[in-house]
Length: 158
Image 1 (cartoon, rainbow, N blue to C red):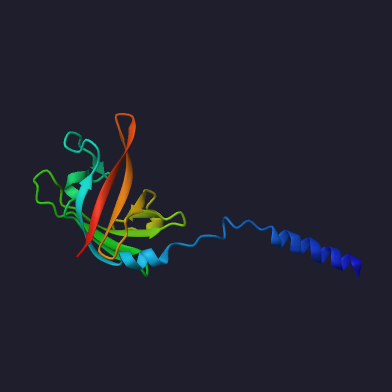
Image 2 (cartoon, rainbow, N blue to C red):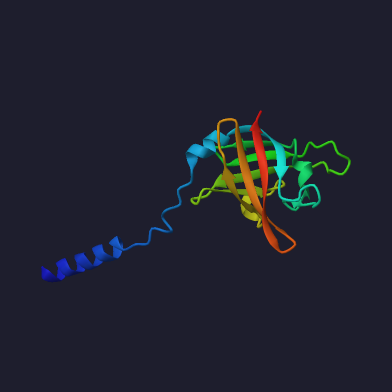
């Protein structure tokens, strides 16, 4: 009987010491539901934006993202985006996307271009700030002449 009790205590100790880092994968579903719907980027700001050109998401000049349309579907973390800037310097581009808020509260984004998300190895992790029912900001870090700066994309709900 003592032998069985010792074995049970040993098993309980092992199960009780299980790491929670792998198990704790909660996402911020409340904020994801707020982001559901159609949004437009109304501005893109970063230090030196009048003098320095920045290519956003390896796609186009950051200024080309002003007036772009984004659709976020919260129940499956998919959506799409379309560049709508009429400037001749901007390209026409649209893509399906996948997105979610990770357990650290960061916005994770992939442009899937009709591939499955697991087939796309490139993605972006941005900070999400100032979330309301009608607006939010996504902040990316960029390297400008060896110095890390923040680039802020301001979204407004349509």
